[in-house]
Image 1: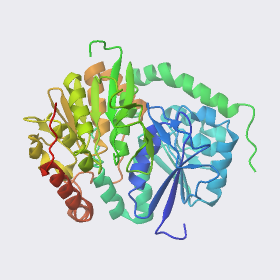
Image 2 (image 1 turned 90 degrees about the vertical axis):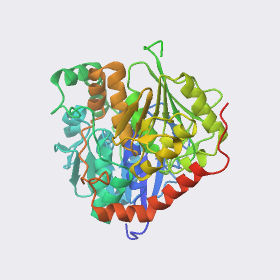
Image 3 (image 1 turned 120 degrees about the vertical axis):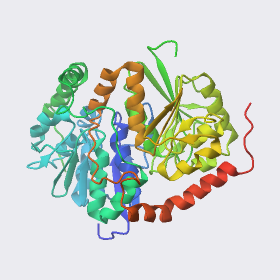
Image 4 (image 1 turned 60 degrees about the vertical axis):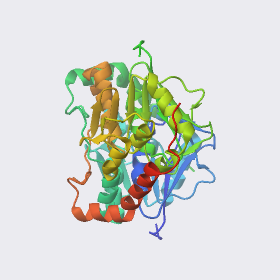
Length: 232
Length: 232
């Protein structure tokens, strides 16, 4: 990031991405002075998110600019993306020259598959933190975890806290505060239970039974599976 | 909303929409049991958001399903959308049969232009609340404001609080709590100043001078301007 006046921010896009995982940081980072946002995917075909919408990539992997900040979101599509060589190679190639390599939610496992979390402290969505050792990472509790140039964050909505934290570091607190005020980020969640540490046990248990026990098992199978991608 | 097992949630899309304004509520509402999400625009051409991405509408105005929940996001494109008859007619037609008519951020003014806020208590992004009387509404402070079937919310990120509040009302607290936990909405903003009531005065003043004094003047001109759209 030699020219601080322009900052290329590249978001990875893949089918089944969680729309808020990239939208929340994009909403904040795109307002950073000099920000240039790109969304890169394997082709320019629209990408179906998990929320009923489809996003048009701005670049394919070959044409994407080199990221100053690489952002890898998560989502239920991660388990499939872990097996896609083009996606993993793109992450590894971009990360090699990026100033900051970041993830939201289960995007951490894509960083991990690209070899970027070995020996690193990291976090991910609460339902998957026990799987971080499978990519060589040590789970550090926290909504935003920095280890050198690697910044990982917790589930979905944590991308906003990650982005504002990074903006404060890159451009100063005043810029980050102004962006936080511009997007009126003065949260008032209706319940206290946005994390299992604070949610009623019955809510956490029920949600795991309905969704996350199976989802984490799928992720574990993908992480342990055959066909580990050989990086260049 | 006669059949509670299926709920049509229709988001208005228009050029210059704030991506987080619709993504945050879509991320929560799409996980509500029975939710069917649509994104409706004047045509099926991709819509450029304010954040560097483009969204493909699922429907044009003619083909969109009747909403049970109509969601109108805001953004810097609202000032132009206020003058677009097809957009305002779509809102009015949908609202007439929707169970819930909602807005995030400056989307409130689109509801207002469609005649839906006359005599109502409402809110919008903090930089525009003084303009609510121009659409006949009374500003009520609050991140989420309900008045009958109309639910308006504050700037950008407030859409998450609005969506979880509405889910709790429609499907019960347990469902809303589970969705809040699934998206790990346990916010930890790096600064306290997400609203002018809590931000340092210098941050608020600087942001108004750089962005919102002019933006609010543009909105006011659009609201006072010629060519007020005649509803059917």
